[in-house]
Image (cartoon, rainbow, N blue to C red; front, side, top):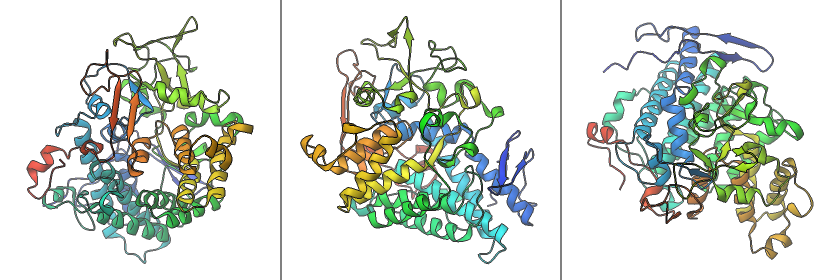
Length: 504
């Protein structure tokens, strides 16, 4: 069976493809069909741009965000929604989830497109083609890793022996997912690592952070190894990224505006899914669920510029408020009228409307953002967590305190072993607390809890009550062993593939 035509080049797409010091801009407006694709280096370059373009589609970027972020405890849903995102938030999963189907389909499209380029370009190709092969290996690894996080149990459970996802490797098209059984979680991780190591060896060009490069592969390797509890390798690859000199933490007045910057101008971002001004999706954007306001960042009522149905949780805000000077308050915009915090009018008791602005106001466009997938702060936190587990307390606390100082904290707000002991907390507790503060709303929290064998606990206003009576019960506790910590594989895929085992 032939693979589907290359219809991934989006009209109006603008991608910066070039070196660190010189950028070339492309605007592909036509697709490449089966017969003409990949005959020369120019075709490989154009097809690679098309593969990146799939990441921009709402069916991928919006759906995967909902699936990864909404199961956490940094967010609160203020009202029931007709959108399937409600089920992701409440843990009331169904096997016909639209967001799961979107994510599964688009992720395997990226993998299949990458496979074509990986197979076409030999390992000993000239540097420009080797770079493109490396980028596609990175994209394939990133997609397989995202898939196994959503549909496969955390690696530490059964040492990766649980069912993962089908591995779509060299020469296979997305139609062939209908004939593949699920590999184990361990097998998927091993494939991801192999792809990333090979990708890093092939890439030699420092492109903008909308594209893969050696350091991007290293950064994802660091995250993968952390999730596997291979702490030595997690530190090794975090060190390579931090020590590369390519990135630096935003500090001072720059930091509160982090997520409003164009990725290419942000020296902390390692990899982001770049959206340009012509790709503002309005009410279909990620940010529309979090924020409703004007171009100056002032909060307005629901419907002014977004749905504004998902808020920062009272739990998260209370934790942040322990240090009023924490600059991370800048990423929360309380909806105030006459100085009074407003509450969602469609739920009783009503949910405080703490708008989240990490996905809004890029280039002063209300719903525009370029979702960040990897950034330098995470590398410090990965290194801190791995070192904490290796017993290297001083090193772990140094990285945590570096980020706390960047957030404007000092004095007693910085961690010491004595202070943690007095508070009854471990160094690992301090690291995970800092991940909660720093990486909130970026799709990490539920994974941080479950892979560390910790429960996800909610005791704050929202619609998450499992008995669906939020007027009387707002508590929810999900154990890391609960079947619901992962999603059902789309039933349509199971129906098409007799080898595909459904999650319980």
